[in-house]
Length: 315
Image 1 (cartoon, helix red, strand yellow):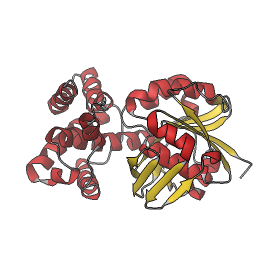
Image 2 (cartoon, rainbow, N blue to C red):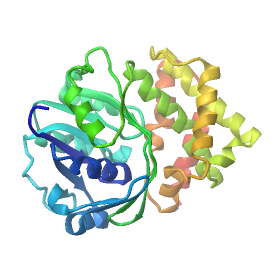
Image 3 (cartoon, helix red, strand yellow):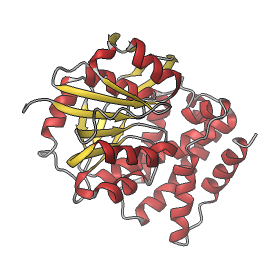
Image 4 (cartoon, rainbow, N blue to C red):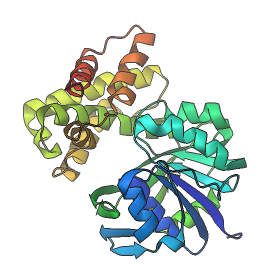
């Protein structure tokens, strides 16, 4: 380790708060958190409480915090060595602007938000050599403002495009994440990494949301068959984009496994609909439909699910 690493976590939702809490507990980091609403206010005043897989608290004097609803804290301007964007998909563009303010000439950007298009947006702002493809399988939900339930101990998967940082270049970040218990895993193919998670999301989230069911109910044969067809429509698009996916049988096995592992979960899209919030459908199934149209490919199931979710959020 060569000194302290300055890390910004933008978007203090459930996963963002968990990641920030683990990093802020590490003596080798200075952490900056940017959030909004009552939850972020509680983090500023009372600190972070994590329960579940591991239970611990982080005192507010262990990190810097900026509230979106108030004037942005400028104490981290130009200082962040790594920036994690963990927000809802619709907030990524706004947070990339804040990331510019916090970054210096060699800052790395890691967007963990769900969906397609974020990697490209970050590359436009920072250049491909500074943007890290990544996903996470940690599970977290909010018991109440300031308190996060760490429901599933997963990993932070970090990959590579042809010009993004190498494993060697990210060795210090990997050390920090390993020390912090975030379980970083290197995946050689960054595009495959992003698309593999998107394919799961497009298959599970809208169908669970429309039916109002927990994930495990999607294993009923007819429901699962529909999930598979939605996913395989997306897989055809990914392959046209040049992504080296697993074969269809493996994709289907992965889908079944993830549904089994998250069988009691109410997906975030369903929670968003029930709480009157904007969903991430525009960065998932809608993005698949739009990309397919570029190749003259029809994706009727993804198109139907997109319209149904978009209509649901109008009422």
